[in-house]
Length: 89
View 1 (tube, rainbow, N blue to C red):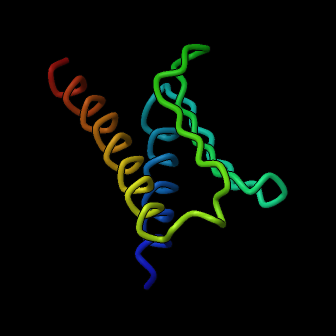
View 2 (tube, rainbow, N blue to C red):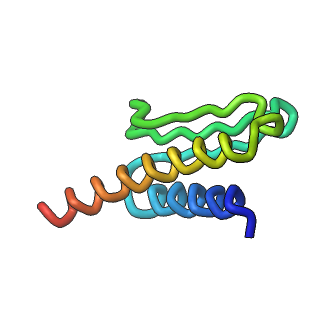
């Protein structure tokens, strides 16, 4: 499987987990007409994480993989923080 596709799958899974298991709202948008990818995580109206990739289809595959890996890393950190907070409660 393409590594970038696997990263997209992981981003979507983590976003869905955040929607189901926390009060955070997540939004993932791959816009073909704008040639961009955007993810946003909010706590109420406060944005706690967002990332926008412009000229998505023109990105070098290696650089795109690095950006997507960074998004996964940030989402995993948010998930861990939620889980740690629950265990502490």
